[in-house]
Amino acid sequence: MFDESHPHKSDASTRFDTPTPVQTPTHVALAPGDGIGPEITQAVVAIFEAANAPVRFVPVTLGEQSYLKGASAGIDEQAWATLRNHRVLLKGPITTPQGGGYKSVNVTLRKSLGLFANIRPCQSWAPWIATRHPDMDVLIIRENEEDTYAGIEHRQTQELTQCLKLISRPGCERLIRYGFELARAQGRKTVHCLTKDNIMKLTDGLFHQVFQEVASDYPDLDAQHLIIDIGTARLADAPEQFDVIIAPNLYGDILSDVAAQLTGSVGLGGSANIGPDFAMFEAVHGSAPDIAGQDVANPSGLLLAAVEMLRYIGAQACADSIQCAWQAVMAEGRHTGDIFDPKHSTQRLGTQAFTQAVIEQLRDASPAGGVAARWPDPKALAVKPPKRSEKTLVGVDVFIDYDQDARHAQRLGERIEAMTTSSGFALKLITNRGVKVYPNGLPETTCTDHWRCRFKGWDDRPVTHRQILSLLERFEAAGLDFIKTEHLYLFDGEPGFSLGQGE
Ligand code: NAD
Image (tube, rainbow, N blue to C red; front, side):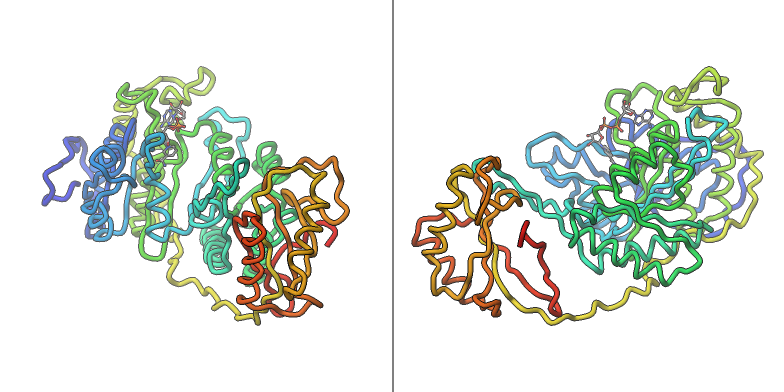
């Protein structure tokens, strides 16, 4: 099971007659992770050995041990080389140390390896496992590289911090098209897109727009959109009404934890991170340090992720056998502590006993056989080349650090108007946290020290970068602390910026 060329080997023994492998083994990097990671990884390795899975694991160290050796992202050079060589990773949960400038291994892997889609099946296992939603079977497809997870944050004034939310058209299209392909491959019927485009009209608006465009290529699937807040409320209340959900990164992160918990336990959720050249499979849950080393962790989340990994590498029959065996143990009511309840369970098992129970069931597992390929090839996606639009620079937002309240807004506006006469710009308005405070603001508006001055070209004429530089020189000469600028562009005549209130 473990690569012979590597010193680490599994000590789990194969106790039963096992099926002959149907294909040459695929090399898969295996990171046991931290906390309960090694215990649940060992469980998966033992079950794979017993099932004679066509996989050869290549151990790789990620996480705490690498952090302690000085790799701030928890991944050292040797680990990168192993990952690049094998391109499929089964990963135990990893502890991200608090503070100290440590970067999350998970976020680093997803973004560095182009794992653009995070797939989280959230299915109830009623009547075997207690849940208030027995008919739930939702596939959550979360964008994995963009949004606020770009991690670009700044403190700009004494009072204010910002985080950039980046949404790109190719990023949306790749993810959404993959979502529709996956929905089709799994015989799903309805695909929901959840965004907040009533507020974030450009970023979430782009995600929604691309969703509608892509949906038109899949007329066999019912495509619907919901605002994220009511969508999440409905998911929590009636998850059986959902089939596939596609969402930007942050919403998808939250939604998938809500959905995984609704199925009965976070310990049941498996997850796949898919990119064009690489795939990573992991449990939804974290490293659970509170129960590490106690032989109580539920290995099901990682096992179900590993089963999907088998399907991804084309080992359908083996995946089906293992899933059948796991389901049989669930059906017998032999449960780990996190899902044990007297109504549905017959026996409380530790991690190792549960693993042996699955192995024993492998003998009798009779998979239906030949489940259709469930993982579309990301390289085969027909992503359209972006259309180039004519881009015209028409103004600039100049943000300043200015420590006064709303009563001073009128004076500030008049001062800036005076210092920018004949600059080629007209001051259109000043806002504070998006609320107009000049001209004609309200003295009651609560202000921070972060003010946005919106300039447009005089007489709505286009402007140049040179003009913007001279405008900023006037701010500098006036002693006003400009902390950032955002250029205002038209794309084919359409504003590429949100309008200020009352603009
Ligand atoms: P957690 O998921 O580790 O634990 C939350 C609760 O669920 C705990 O009570 C835990 O005992 C329980 N639990 C989790 N998995 C279980 C299982 N398989 N069986 C039984 N019970 C289980 O979340 P946390 O405590 O917020 O995070 C702990 C660490 O994990 C943090 O360092 C966090 O950064 C990391 N984390 C890693 C990943 C990942 O590697 N993908 C994901 C989330 C959190």
